[in-house]
Image (cartoon, rainbow, N blue to C red):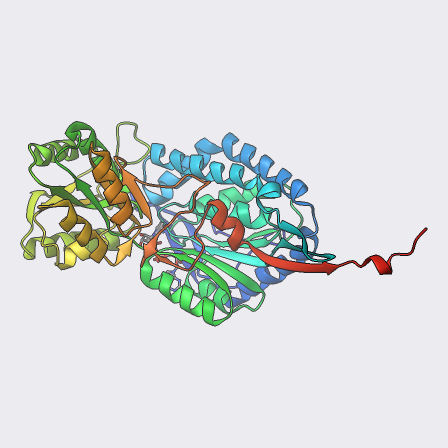
Length: 488
Ligand code: NAD
């Protein structure tokens, strides 16, 4: 059995915790590894190593620090196939979806290679006679990230490259449901011969998260996961004087206007709803037709039925299982809830039978029509392959509905009218907007801009926000007087 270890101070070490959890392939239920539950003592060991490592790392010129990232990019590219398979085996998503994770992860490494320019300061000469003022950016110290199960490879890279390029040292806690992929990444990181303590990894669950939140040497925490835990991490971290960015859950609405190109829109919407089996924080969930429409429902139903569900390494498969049996049961009971609230099941994917994978957590595409907009299903993050299809008469009412949503991760509009698109962009209360786009996932140069309960904090992951988050500003005001200077 593969017993996962922590990576601390440049070495593989056993967790101090004696409790271990199974890491399970969601398609087959095969136990692939045992992951330690973790303890505050593991955090302490990683934080001491990272604190020690910081002393040397922060003094290394940024131009030299990024040389490690150039090599990391190459190693990730060279190992993309194996790393993608690992994601499929532990998370269930398809091989193509897993590969797409690495494209964005690598893009973040590339973006962070620009740090020597991106973290430059500002200088004003003569703010008063003989006095200059300037601002420099310095690293914070030890930073830590806590990541969710649904993007085992990509999400740690929203933070790691920027944190270390800015001169911080780093501790990663992958999701205990999918810890194998980041363990493989750490094996690659080991080959970089970074100074000891620059990147560390500790496995576990709540004990590690609480350890981070309480450890005096950890200065900043990046969290991605569900909203309740994001709120907890943000509140406790801030109360303990830490800088926190906490990205939370979502319930993403998409509106389809009568002037949208229906063939293109249906395909994009279906891809957004069922991609990664609906387990994406940018998955479209509530699809709202606005005004008079012909054939949208038929088109969505037809494309949903065509989507092949199964084991993610099989080539013809477009959708894998959900992560755990508990998750499957939860999605199933939410479908019941939608029906009880008056929704009509156009397709029910609950009796999925996947040959060879009978024990897998499979749910096939499901569509519920006319779910009440003020009901529980419409307000709950399902995180499974379920589309709620509803109708609203006007664009104004649709935007008002979106703005009443407690989440604000993404909102999308499909239209051929620039005027409607512009109105939507301006008025919709969500941080990532798609216009004729179904998954408005920002590239590395832009912040991943969740709003409302989809984000707790000020500075998001990626882009310029990342440089601000991982540095603190120091302002220097300097006076040099003529009379102090000896003539020679
Ligand atoms: P989760 O909240 O259950 O877990 C996230 C992390 O928190 C994990 O590392 C886990 O170990 C830790 N954790 C779990 N319970 C904890 C507790 N009680 N106290 C402290 N830490 C705890 O999330 P998940 O199920 O792994 O991921 C799915 C969620 O993540 C969805 O809500 C999804 O929308 C969200 N998500 C958001 C984004 C975003 O950018 N906004 C991106 C991906 C996923």
